[in-house]
Amino acid sequence: MDQNIPIDIHTNKLLDWMISRRHVNRDWQNHVLTVRERINNAIQDMPVHDGIAKLLSGSYINYFHCKKIVEILKETEADSRNFFGSYGSKRMKDWQEVLRLYEKDNVYLADAAQMLIRNVTYEVPGLKKQIAKCGELQEECDKKEAEYIKAEGSVRSELAAQCRQLGISAPEAKSGSGDAKTWKATLRSELVERLSELPRANAQLAAKAAALKEAVTFYNEFVSFVAPGCSERLQLLKHIIDHGDTTTYEWTYGEPPVQVEEPVLDFGLEDDTGKSGAGDTEIDFGTDGGIDFGDLENGNADAIDFGEAAVDETGGIDWGNIDTAETVDNSEEIDFNISLEESGIVVEATGLEGGVARGNEALTVLDNPRLRNQFIDEVMELQAFLKIRLFEMRDDSVRGVQLTQLQNVPMSVQLQSSETVEKMLGQVAEVLSTANDPKIRHLCNIKHSYRYVDRLVEQLQHKLRLAEKMVAQQAAARQKKAEAAEEARALQPKLKLIIEKTKELQKEIQQDISKRYNNRRVNIMGGVNLL
Image (tube, rainbow, N blue to C red; front, top):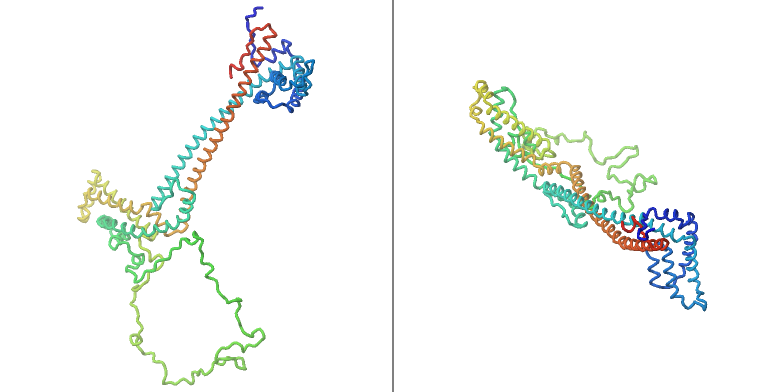
């Protein structure tokens, strides 16, 4: 046979190839267990040597390691060698026995082949897969962190927009937990403080509504012509145009009140600060909490002093020297003919003059939720009328019919052009935009509903908690990424070491097989080459 033809053996088929060539027996595994047991016992007593420590690191001990250990023991145990060349050291005898058991029936060759197959098929790919998984985990953590940063920015933007809408300060994006807690604690009081802006906003709304006087007159004259006898429309809007943002009392009764007693607003701010006045409402009954009735318990009723009015023997009450009706002098009878002017009593005029506005009547028209909604409804009604009129004025087919039907309409209605109606529509739109301003609507709801305040505070605090949660998730993602990177760094040296050991083992197996075939070149394929 040509000695130059190499022997190619695939790694996965290496053990089967050895068995089929009768280099090892099929029951080799039974003998390996005994060898492993001897190695475990021998390794308990080893000399301190760098070469031995290097051999025992990184992989299982195989036959070739044992041979190198014996070579090292020949140096460390040289003193125990006798005249015949044998060693008296127990260490040397144990490892020589391991070599003998390994070499019997070439058990070492099958054991080395199995180690090579296990390293190539499982150990190295497993470590590589684990390192790759750590890399994927780092990338996933980067993506999650970016998502959490984006979510935090979105939530904080919404929170800042809502705070701007309410006119309050928003918490800083990078503020500490203490600043966030302070913002949460003062949020309710800050919302309540914004209520001072409501009167000025209502006054501005009333001033803008005054510009709708011409539009309201146009609407009422048109309605009175089309539907004679119909009551005047937009009365509340007309009242605000003529008198401004008056009290509800004046709108209801037609005259201003003499005195206004605004309702007291309770938003539960004391609950936020932990203060409470409940303890001040208790009744103090003295030191012992009892009422002293004297000697009533002993049956002495005379102990209670009612002055000169005492109980007589018959059981009646003696009222002292009070004269009866028969003893009253007729000359001192009461004169019922005295005039009210002489008596000093002042009688108010009939009607509602001198009234006091209390409760909801003390609120201004635009501050009263019911009347404010009515005001907005009337402005929207006026807007709808003007839109229809503008459409009719611009449509040629409709305008021709109207010229014949509206000949007797008042001149103030006839003189209105599409330009003036469009101008009125712009004024109406401006009033509606001011009335429906989100900040003003929030302030109105805050003033008239403490439950709305609770919901609003909870909503704002929930967004802040959500932003803080996103920050915590970012920190967790960074921590997880750092742990994955640390694990990958720890696995890299282990992978490198096991690859080196596997290459050495493959080379030694190839040399051993080559000696059995007159030093023919042996190639174990699919092993180290793939690593």
